[in-house]
Image 1: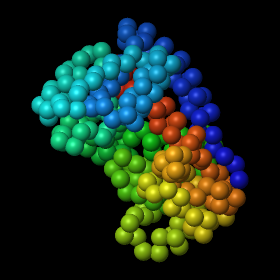
Image 2: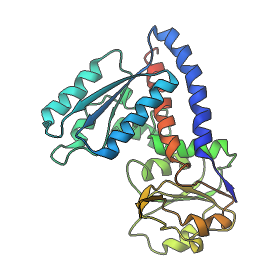
Image 3: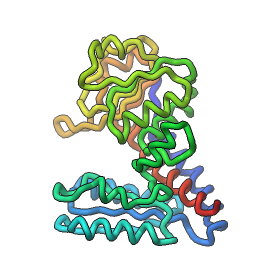
Image 4: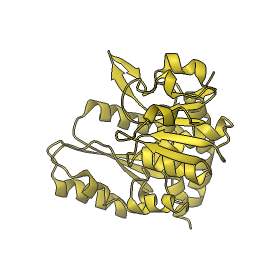
Length: 281
């Protein structure tokens, strides 16, 4: 068993992006810009936003932080995002989720033009991914692909199983693996013989939000196991994989924390520079 060190790989990527950001700044005559919108006072969201702003500073991306109170109306949220969409200094827009319950998140996100959609959530970017064409890809699944690539995992012709079918991780993850010529199966809460299907995987990606759901009997000897889950159990972080018992069977495995998590913000920085670079086209 070998750990995939997402923290180290993410640091390497941020160092590479810092050089790219400097080159891009000369061509744009300004730094690449990322606008982050936080609505409400959710403590976890506040931490995520701070981490994203810190990453921007490290890479050389200018961040624009916009805060609205939890009482903000749908109109106020949409007007803010629409204004950022028109701002020529803003290359990417991120709306931190979840939003307060009274707001329609999909309508707010729909105000982000595809060319500034650094989260890769828009119908246009998802459609480009489904067609195997170049677009902006959701940060977490894109981070998983970088982990696999930089760890030397060959995907062509391999059997890949994704547990979870969310629009944010599961579906784009499956499409990325398919575009890399893997044979992909997507499992979910209605899947029959789930354990049997998982045990056939050369590459197993768990993204369901259930702590330690993937047990040793669900993993083939020598499989690559990617744990996307972040769950809090007894005050500690735990993944979707029963790491202690699965790790001895895996050839490569990501830990939680320190695996996929750091890659998500690194890919956000990468997507921001991608969006900025397209402003020059």
